Image (cartoon, rainbow, N blue to C red; front, side):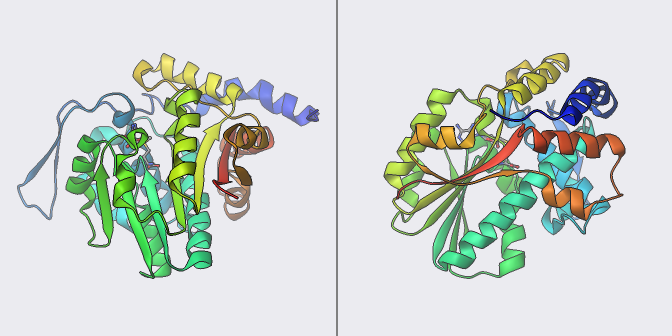
Length: 318
Ligand SMILES: C[S@@+](CC[C@H](N)C(=O)[O-])C[C@H]1O[C@@H](n2cnc3c(N)ncnc32)[C@H](O)[C@@H]1O
């Protein structure tokens, strides 16, 4: 049975109060009402972002986090492409962020980037597939670090999001963007499934129910003989906390359902091998020592200690 520390108790009791201090003033999910953004490079050109509902409405939240942390803490996380895109973001995108929520998103990217780099370095010729890619700029961060190598990059998201992404981020000639429902598996036809393949699902599974995730992982297992899957997950208690917050801020359409309390148990349920179950903040706490607010640091420590948010790395086949 998991040991319970007295400090957990103190931290836990203080969390609700801290939550009031760090929570975004207007909610973390963006709902755009035909926002217009002008850009210097387009002169008088106007970019019109149509109303985006539900999961897709969360599109700008992680980008805002990447920009904020790149400016404030480049020694921890630096995303040149997101900084370049800042001028295109609608003003409303900035509402709702806090130091803590921005550190959570950036820590997820920080860890997943490092895991991706390790995979590419190990496998040389391989695929890297971002499922539910949104406006993530991981492709740019990774190729900036590693150069081109013999890596095939793919991004999959709903067709309307891929269109937004192309409009926003552009598409590099070495990046294949596929519009479609990732659960439908049609995107697999565009990928050489014989190659070692890293599938990354960042900030997506939470919005779906467990049976759908399990069926999806089984389908990935069948499709990718040499496949590995990396995704982030929240614990049941973390999910309750987040949903309470989502409800309070009026974004019921972004409610979260999927949680993982025990990484090993979950891997066994999917009949795959657990390679790693990693907390978000070990490196962030070290690199940003003395630079974060006390409240942010306390919540980060509590979250890691209680495994409220983790990154799972699974090997799909023996
Ligand atoms: C919170 S965003 C995360 C985006 C990106 N992975 C990141 O970390 O910045 C969730 C993304 O999942 C995408 N998504 C939701 N359901 C999907 C589906 N069935 N197929 C493909 N993408 C989906 C949304 O369109 C959105 O881009």
